Amino acid sequence: MDREPMLERIAGARALLREVIEATDLPLIERALLLADMNLHWAQWNLGAPVSLMPETEYTAERGRNPE
Image 1 (spheres, rainbow, N blue to C red):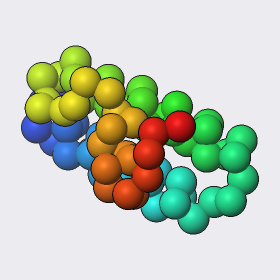
Image 2 (cartoon, rainbow, N blue to C red):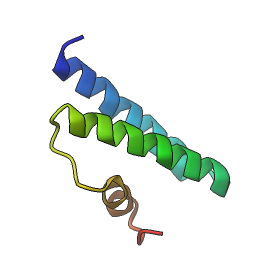
Image 3 (cartoon, rainbow, N blue to C red):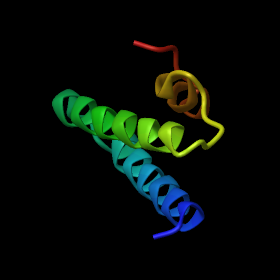
């Protein structure tokens, strides 16, 4: 698979994860999904995508929360 389609799929996976993260009220599930998002974030980073240094800053900025 070429780089651009790979980055699109990873971005899509992260978007799906965020939907579930925002919908859950179970802290253990939220944390597990945040870890999955972090790994996808680093995959984007390693493929050269312009992402922030820390995935938490992307997530909390979108969600309007302070980092935990």
